[in-house]
Length: 129
Image 1 (cartoon, rainbow, N blue to C red):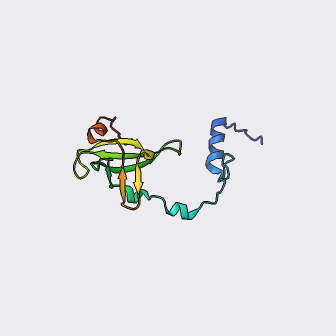
Image 2 (cartoon, rainbow, N blue to C red; image 1 turned 90 degrees about the vertical axis):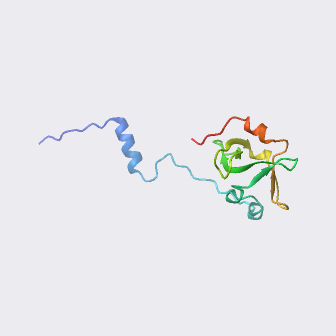
Image 3 (tube, helix red, strand yellow; image 1 turned 45 degrees about the vertical axis):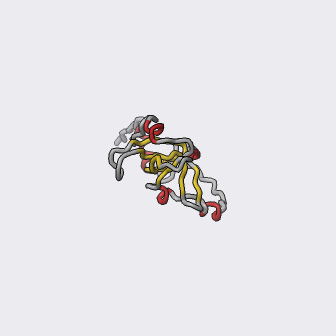
């Protein structure tokens, strides 16, 4: 009795290989790096920054931190600030580079030098996608 030969389309074969191979050939080992854990511990936890007020250098409150976002390049960090509103309602969200914020552990204050509420409200509104 003759056996029937089954031809599998190339895309189906590739999909089956990816779905059923526990470690596809595309995986790559991650290079582990030893970090200074004491320096990391002196950093800022996002969970402790969320909701904190943001002041300008004239000691005026200009907003609060709504979120911290890591850019798609994984190098740029942005602070999403809520400007105006009350208890999270009616505020205008804007994104600023995290590096623009000055943080001081001694008085737990976050400062955005030169900012005013009006200037921040005129920045493009940030929307979560």
